Image (cartoon, rainbow, N blue to C red):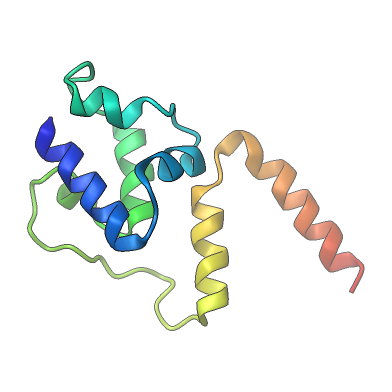
Length: 112
């Protein structure tokens, strides 16, 4: 699992975020990465792998070390940096918070 840990932490560094920040943003336990590093976790779920890969803008195969191609094209290519940041934030929102954030956004737009 050390390879997975190293891949995740390297990707986080290249994105300018800490591993704990990524876990927080994705609604994962703060101990997720240390559990992987120390062998307390033998792997991660498909859902967690998909969340992390999306957050880090790589394929799940790359994240898991099964592919050497790092970046994956996204539907966000061609958007302004502000819109890309909004989309990345939206992708990192845990499902249990998505409805609340969506309602806040709709309320803000109603006022304009």
